[in-house]
Length: 99
Image (cartoon, rainbow, N blue to C red):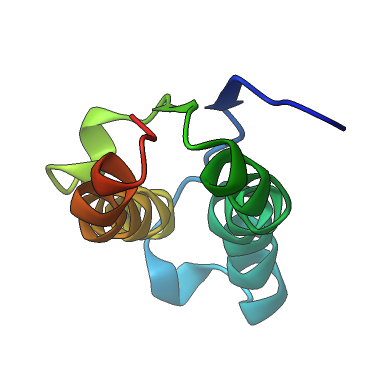
């Protein structure tokens, strides 16, 4: 790629149940898609956006990233992780021209 203007992160799915009722493999798969998939994309795209001093990151998240929802423990945990990631990145990215 030479220029990337926008990265839209919209990956995600939900598993039902409390965390203790799901296998560790199921929990890891949820994090792989909902969190680590987005991290991998950003690791590829952010260096290009920083070099061009422009770009937009758009995160399609969920109220589950702001408020825990009963029987959606793991889903909410992945969305809380995304909220923390984006909040942590925001001020540096703005200084580098990425919104």
